[in-house]
Length: 110
Image (cartoon, rainbow, N blue to C red):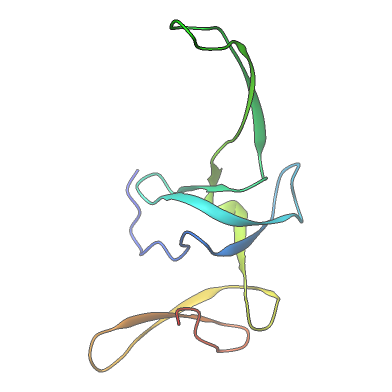
């Protein structure tokens, strides 16, 4: 499913989880997949996978990994005001797009 609007969350942004068992926890975005609308947040939505050795020298065991979350289930935490906030986009006269916090009106990209 293709997204119709620009993906406003980026790698390195701090977000707070809004729904699910990790609700209220904050983390930093590790990977973004804009084609599917998912993102991976460090330490959030941790899953375990039981693996068999598939090749010589590979170890079997339980591997923990961060599963992707839907972008609609997280909200950006502003670095200036510290509150959860929506993200707006301003376009300068030169055509440069910058993100800003809709709560405190401060730019996010510096």
